[in-house]
Length: 169
Ligand SMILES: [Zn+2]
Image (cartoon, rainbow, N blue to C red; front, side, top):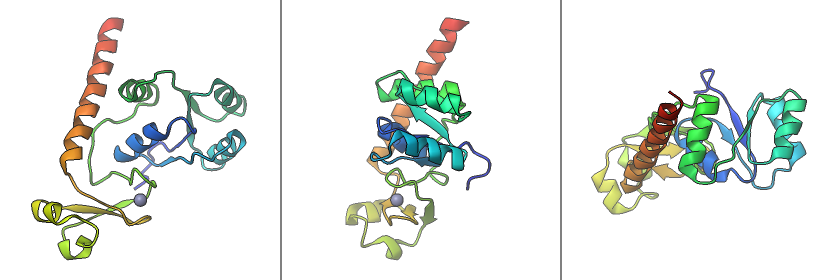
């Protein structure tokens, strides 16, 4: 965990980006009630890079020597592609390293179905052998149908980056 990976704090407009980064294993703080001064303070204190769509916040961060990435895209795939090229985000999904998209908690893998049976529907409990429990909020995850969707979107992000690079070359 942590192993020197860049840590982030997302502004109030970047909730979806925060969720995706957590799935990709990044430590991302997000709270829709954060004010700009709070974001700046937390970023500075915990050495986090700000991800923002707010020019004003971005400029304030740079002035205060806080790392900040300004995102201008709208669609999530394009936002992630933009972020990946600006912050060198590793786009390989490894569920063993993912964080809880809901709360940023660390996930712990278990194959003990008994331990998750109250929190997983019977069908999924039968179909899957590996489950991931969030140590913070207790939510349980598995590589169900949503997992294919996650992979598809990440592949879309990769092709957006590829086509951008081709244009430059
Ligand atoms: Zn959680």
